[in-house]
Image 1: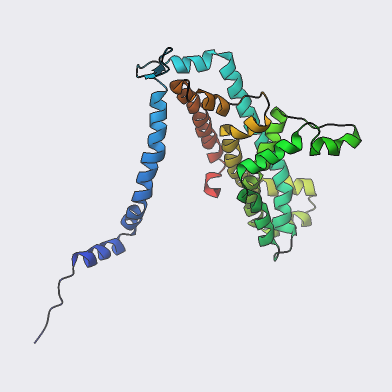
Image 2 (image 1 turned 30 degrees about the vertical axis):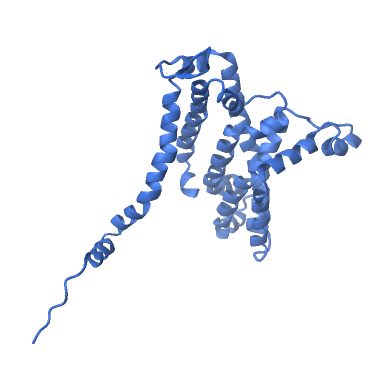
Length: 294
């Protein structure tokens, strides 16, 4: 007498289908977070862009859904907005450049020179400032840069004085805030650099500068570009640090913040500027392979 196996239930059939089709399984796993990304992030950007074409009633300050391009026209024709946009880009680029200059020697020490047993502790030490509150760090720098503060007290014996509050102070504070985001990618890139390449360069008689230009820099350039994505984008959109230590300096984030309650469509138009700049920046660094290093 032979017996037949019971028919597989719907759950078992579904499990078998997913087992045979790993791409379908991955698609189902990612469907929920991707849907949330599309609704919460991309949807909000779409609403932001659309609201930039509205206007504001000059008497009641209420948003009027009349489609026009007046806000974008004002961005391109008003000198203040152009100057603030260029200043914001300059600050973001300056912060990125300073982070690269400071991060490379630190990352080189942690990745290539330090005792391998101590490297995890050094990485934790680099990450430690990120655990502190943004406002605590920014206001600490406000005390350091204040007139008669710690920096002035340190430089006074040399006949110098601190920069005080302003554009320089903003760049210094933003560099301190986002420096770990540059150190970590460079550290990871230097760790993956084969020691045999450095030994071969030394055996062939290359000096330190030539080895750096021909071997080290090309190998870690994607890591530098990956770190710059964070430092550039975070600096471009920041508006809190400049309010704390920037004095009278205005960046694009400040203009957006100040117009949210007064002229929401204009604030939305201003908000599209850093989004567009960052998109072009990502397209530029994508050619270096940086996005695969994130």
